[in-house]
Length: 392
Image (cartoon, rainbow, N blue to C red; front, side, top):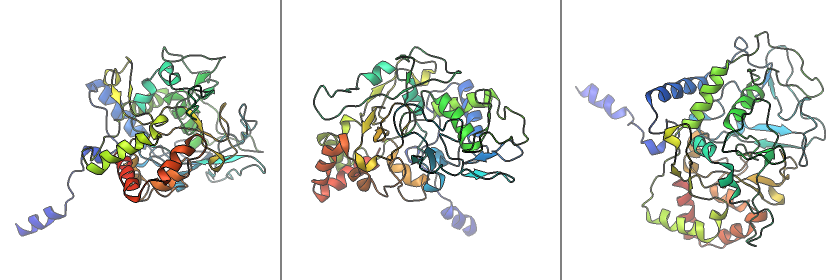
């Protein structure tokens, strides 16, 4: 009996639901749960040379970049190159837009072209994306102020993009001069989760599908051969299951909401203007998944591009964004980021910030005023604000 008691004391308890990022959105039907689980399995599937990996790639699975559905680590950071002004990336079809820094045996990985602009992108957390995908463009445009008409120094703008041939316009979308609003990625360079998923399979793992049948090209070598696995390497059903999985992952759950310091930090967050871009509350319209329809949620983002100043200008861009413009990242789940990042924060678009305070102090451009107000807070006020952010 003593043996069993001793072992029982060593068994860790079941983690609380709000300490985990992964898990399905509440309210899915039995059929929807089946597709969610199928997508979960596909998301974790590790590719090899026998199943189509490469010949050029960055990662071997979706989950390897999004451990526990959380943020990536510097080891999984992606490099994009070739576009230094709004418009067309001249390296697309000749290596761009993504560096393929790994290759299967018999192939050499890619190198960044000499003189090409580039930027590093740390993979984001993927939870709650279905809520953002369900919003309509009208809701996003309601917060855009390209000419700063209200003179608050904030002039968020959407990133308009050309849609791939397989894109199907839905009622949530508004076309503008043949282009559509992006809402996923560091610079909002993907219009839908389907586009984001297809690109990730192809550019991250060298996996072809019915939507993208060509292996990634390599700079100065073009399309240099296949990997001896027939294309497409994943069926359309797998893409659909992964997209459904991403749409129905639950939103991150709050923690310590009733803590005095958390509540004080919440008030400070608003008072110094952080909420002007990191908009707290949204409500989804009707959508094809009942569990996501007419739900109020709190991602703390406006899904718009903002000029973040010279310090965050990497000289690279996507779509019509300027090189110093970045999409406001969602802050929900921020306090759980370290769990997926090896116990330490790697924040901002490329993981350069090693703490929440360091990330705030890197804000410039449209966020300069809020950054300066944060810097002028007392030590205890800064602690309260950070505790609030860690509660999201």
